[in-house]
Amino acid sequence: MLIRITNTAEPATDLGFLLHKNPANLHSADLAFGKAYVFYSNAAAQRCTACLLLEIDPVELVRGAQRPEDYVNDRPYVASSYLTVAMGRIFGTALAGHCQKRPELVATKLPLEITVEVIRSRGGAEILHRLFEPLGYRVGAAQLPLDDNFPEWGESRYFRLNLEARATVHDALSHLYVLLPVLDDEKHYYIGDAEVDKLLRHGEGWLRNHPERQLIVSRYLRRRSSLMDQAFDKLLDEEGAAVEAAESNLEKAARAEKDLERPMTLHTQRLNLVAAKLKDLGTKTVLDLGCGEGKLLRRLLADRAFEQIAGMDVSHRSLEIASSRLRLERMPERQRKRIRLMQGSLLYRDKRLSGFDAAALVEVIEHLDRPRLAALERVLFEFARPRHVLVTTPNREYNVLFPTLPPGKLRHGDHRFEWTRAEFASWADAAGARFGYQVSFEPVGPVDAQHGAPSQMAVFSLPTEGGE
Image 1 (cartoon, rainbow, N blue to C red):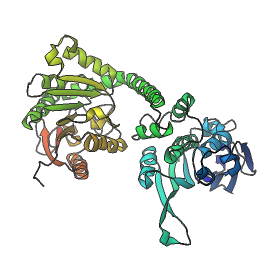
Image 2 (image 1 turned 180 degrees about the vertical axis):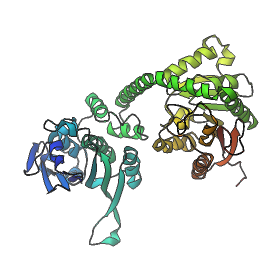
Image 3 (image 1 turned 90 degrees about the horizontal axis):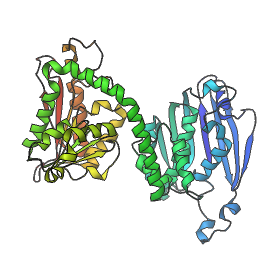
Image 4 (image 1 turned 120 degrees about the vertical axis):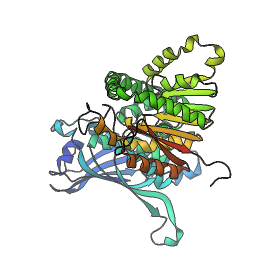
């Protein structure tokens, strides 16, 4: 099995320092199941390519095998956990993020090209894109024929994987180390507690926020529920710590946004409009995603038309505040049964989100990085799939009418973007079409003839039975 890593940033031979392998030499390492080699097929200033070749000894591979089919398989040729073991042995220093001679190179993002010659991708080309594109790679997946000489035999289940990105060598190796066994969905060695630590160590900085986190953890740990629970507990602890560390800044930004909008009580208008719209739609069960301190929840609780209400937020602290302000502990039992609070992320599939008539996201999407919107769309429209979804977000065109807001600045320090009316409509129409929802739009707040309303709302609705 063969993997190639190419750097095209001059001097490209800096790749040798990062991999701790001199381009002028042939490097090798003996393994229990074969031998690994590192050599350079090209080592020029403009382009440098390091190749990791793993030769598996088929006798050692099947020694002690219990089943006849173990003697004939694709293990010597297909990238798998054998290759990651070889990577750990021969690129161990680079995987750890160390570079003794040129330490400044470790954090340098380089234009990298990576080719895995043969990989078995359970899930086909689609899963290759789902796993690597959120990490910033341009993905090329060429399905290999069963036999070049007999094209009529059709395609095999194997792919040649090409990745291009500007990334650090350390990050690229870490991504491969975790994801190659995930794609193969097999491991040749015992899976124990140490694998959880290994997964989290090499997934540090990217796994927690990956939209396919559930799939990665499940396959990497061979679906062993006890180990998966350990991994998710630790990932959620990291997520909570990151949220707590950022909350003081978020609170300041939220106060600044409220101060900016206070003259027109826009925040109140938003919440009242969403609550009224949910009632007009005839919804009985409502999910408030990104519920924060529970202001919309309080409005919904006050109306007996809403029979079941749930609020979800990634911030444990916000949920504690919501619980306190809603007085859940002192609430009569009959009322208490109508509401529940849940901690969770909008980017990961969650069974608790299913079965609701409607979901509301009030000023939520603009706090997400744009590449993560695709994950949110699938979680919301494909998996949770309520009959109605209400989404509000600021209208960037209106910002010029805020006298205290500097030109070009966003309303909230944590906003990743703010959309114009046309941009919001383009996103909403595309998402609705992709997942089978009809979409309508409403302004939120006073409407200016030129700039529109300060906020905007999209109402997604599944067609009624018998409709188009």
